[in-house]
Length: 131
Image 1: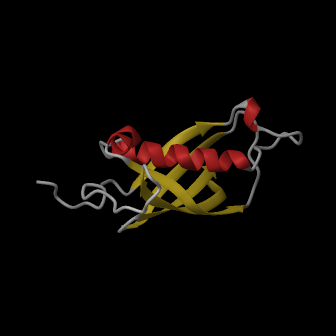
Image 2: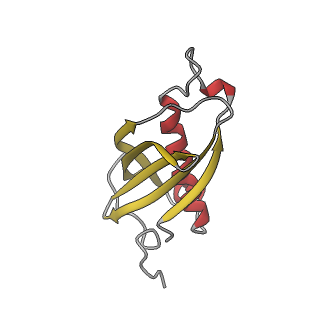
């Protein structure tokens, strides 16, 4: 599976707060978008996981902000899979504007089944052959 993917994000007006800056919660939405697009770029999808009864839920989040972003800024979000093992996936994120790092973060997602029980990631997700 692909381990890194970069997408462009154009800051929309509704993503800004009263100070004209991107509201901090939007970075988490963008991180989710990064995970979805990384999976898609790998030739798979969240729908494929869900159809197999597998759900990925956020278990841990960490964010660091260095500079604010504003309406109409063009940002680059790079999502990297740091580790995928057992029932956990750890991602790292970097958000850049004009080549400067403005935010970075990481998440851990847990793999569960529809009943909420922890389950292992599928072999293809871990890069194992699935003959």
